[in-house]
Amino acid sequence: MGTEGDTENGTARPNARVIAGRYRLEERLGRGGMGVVWRATDQLLGRGVAVKELPLDETLSAAESRRQRERTLREARALAQLSHPHIIVVHDVVEDDERPYIVLELIDGGSLADRIAAHGPVDAAEAARIGVDLLGALRAAHAAGVLHRDLKPANVLLENGTGRVVLTDFGIARVTGSTTLTETGSFVGSPEYTAPERMSGARTGPESDLWSLGALLCTALSGESPFRRDSLGGVLHAVVVDEIRPPAQAGPILPVVRGLLERDPDRRLDADRAERMLRAFRETGRTPESAPSGLLPSERGPSLRRSPARRAEGDGRSPALPAEHAVRRPPTRSALVAAMAVAAMAGAGISAAALLVQDRGGDGGGTPASTAPGTPASPSPSVSPTPSSPPSPTPTATGSPPPAA
Image (cartoon, rainbow, N blue to C red; front, side):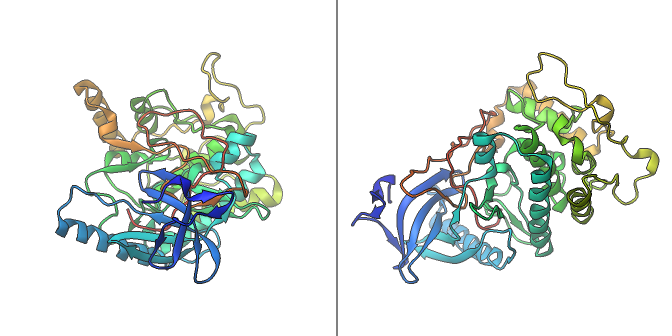
């Protein structure tokens, strides 16, 4: 295995590892639950790439390990067929010493999480731009039968110079009709950005990615997810039970945020309508009130007011919109099931970490964001079951290719 010491003064050391006879691994950009990402050089084409080294479970039998490897490669190749300007490019899928690797586009820029940590939240116009680009990426993936399942600021890269938005880290994505990259029966993801229907295990569809986008927009605008709490149990409760209070900064695009953070996936704002609403805001400065098909006018939330009130003093969170702007729908059956699961878990004293794996701040197993020459990239925070401080401002490896979940 290569180490972080494989580079010296920007040049590759003689002992740098070469995989598949072609890709020289030069610097570890990050590590996460879904693998290790390396800055590398494609020696055949003479260009910089990122290589994601996927982990293999050494406890598996030889036959099980072979099936896992074959499934990983098959799904990675299928996901590599995705072609969209806002989805990371997969260049190659290779094997070396019976271990799969995915060769990816190397993005010169950090993640949205890095941007927020270093410079603070973005304004509504920038949030709308990011939202439009991500909606385009999600629509392309969903049309191909691919669900991302881990949309969060750490998995969105912003290219230096162009501002291009790139959706990365499809490491736990799912391809329709296939088994997932992660073991079935386990939950992998980031609870603060996970839809309530996924929490309950009731269903996972394109709507779940749209919920995650709603939470991501809130984070981009205010600096933190509206579901951040001091414990994992608190996060679960906030997602499935608590009143949803978008931050005050979401006011200019409140109809979109409110529609995306609809707990009932059948009533959630769809991607086409959300994109039209965000484009209208970018063009006119106003977001039209709209609701998912089948929602009666009397059921739509109130219109936006100009002076959103702050949350009660002492809350310690970003200011939130008044209670009348909160998303207050009757809990769906899925949400109730998840709420009961949270209560049972707490009552039984079961560690939430055993049920949910939260990867916050940068998934070193993601797709690579390159850093400025001479600036070592900090490894992404390791997975932690409890919400932690905002991600480090240092650009990290956060995207990922499209392997399946």
